[in-house]
Image (cartoon, rainbow, N blue to C red):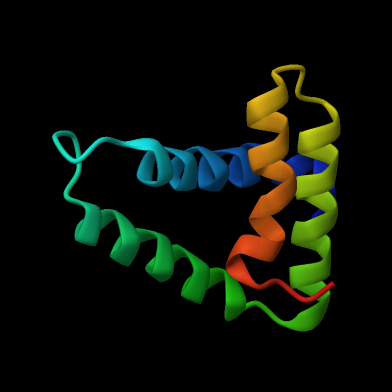
Length: 86
């Protein structure tokens, strides 16, 4: 599967992480948010090395195509935030 075909999935993961990262305590319990982010990270870290690198490439492409600066910075940091292989 090409990176282009994976972009909707990559963007969905980024949006889920962003929701958990930025939700207030009234919206999502902070412990639940952290657990959700850890669960997503654990699932992505189960990818083999090649797929983790492919995901980093897709994150970079998504970041580069995003105009909103804070969203672009968040996307650019996702790979490091979850510990993907470089």
